[in-house]
Length: 204
Ligand SMILES: [Cu+2]
Image (cartoon, rainbow, N blue to C red):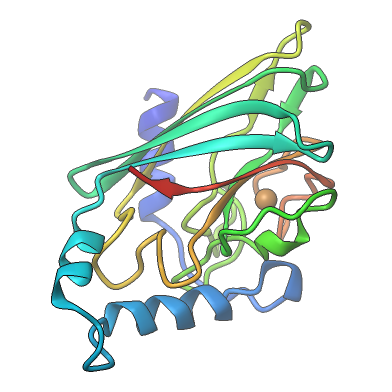
């Protein structure tokens, strides 16, 4: 079985609750239901709901704590799967945890403003967690000796926009790269250390 197939199987096989504050899912879930309830006010134009539901591409400009661009990412909706490609440079060699976080705000230097992991279905963290995983959990990014790395990931059953639990809900979302490797099972964040880069996921 290919690693990609394993990843997809893992995605299909998990369930439970995440309650720790570092990975608080309440914001994401609440915001998602608020936005999916869409025209909650008469002032909300139908056109904005329609366009929000049709976002199939998004991009991310990843910046470090000093505000320097260290990478980019692209999200593409392909059927029921969100395909994510991340490229980064200027990082320390080794494995780095990468996740979607629940708020589209990246305030340096600690990027705490991005909130916990995007976890719309209240599961636990980690692709190898039997009670997981979060909607935005991905494999580690391997960064080489030259400080550059690439990550290709697929989020099966997720949507960039539209549906019950879109990535781009009312408070948006961010992509975060961590200082260390994600162990793929420790709730809430895989023991992946501090947040070294962050970028707001922006609809294209
Ligand atoms: Cu993270």
